[in-house]
Length: 284
Image 1: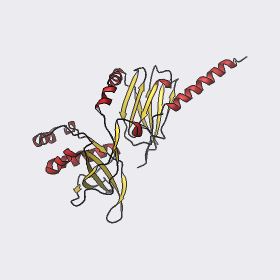
Image 2: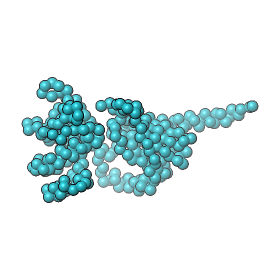
Image 3: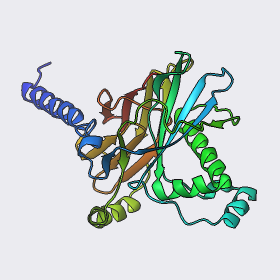
Image 4: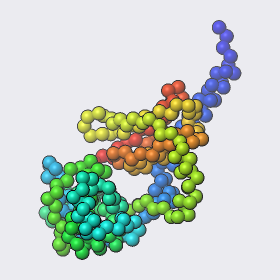
């Protein structure tokens, strides 16, 4: 049976174009921190150092609670309101904005290896916590919970604040999210469009299923999306944002692992209409 070579050529060109669009799909990956106008680099000031251990292996952990005017203040909270909050059934309703830095290895006084985390909060709120032991305990509690949630840890509540040490290791710069008013105003039309878009069904898989994870795989169902050229994907270290134009789908989720942004890849299957994002996990 004769074959129409022009059809094969057309299909080949279409596949090449589709492959090109898939390569361009992650064009902003790795640039979120360097080019994102919603973030900036800060050098926080030392505040206090909290010593605890992981559970159940008793590995030593130091938490550097730092302060910066660049981190937003939490809502105003009196001491009576804090007592009432702690006695309530859901104390998680009060949020303390904080930047949770990545773990770094340090050596303790016995030259043994240990892990340190840098956490940055608002400077004014930190000073308030320093003046009241109840606020300080509350701050340490939410800091421990924040680290546990982000890094999948279990930290002992038998912690100790080091008296003569405000910081363990050396102060490092941190990249924090920040939004200025002009940027928020410019994004308002897009945000309302995103709100009107549907949230697609997404499945998160870990490979291998057992042991230390090497890859986090997101499978996103996008019925009605005929080509990857209508997709805009941003992959952050712990966040995935996807928009399918024009206002078909919008997804904005935080995932449970830190991943290598630059090594992440995405592939859209036009037959199944599923976008697969493969993200290498940062080894712990």
